[in-house]
Image (cartoon, rainbow, N blue to C red):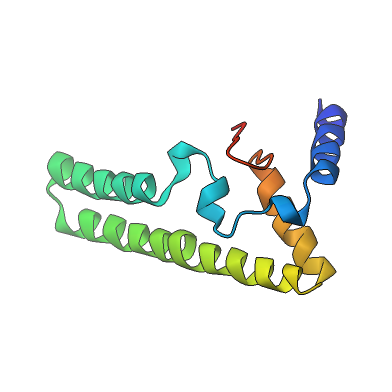
Length: 116
């Protein structure tokens, strides 16, 4: 249950150090969560809606939503990680905690291993 999962996450966070943190968040993400898969998913959603419904307003709304998703996740999220990592490497304890919590949230264990 929840207690065991929290304990395991806490142990993993303790085992993971700032030295394990990759320079880019994408180096830590699993293969299914890479920029190319995110772009392909967005294109697929927009293209699929246009193919199925031929409704410009639906396709446009979906395209706008996908563009916001791309901006936030591919741009802001990645830049935020890099800024937090730089601050953590300068000794900012809150930034270090933030970086390590991001990495452990999707099962990063250091190196080239991804458990998710």
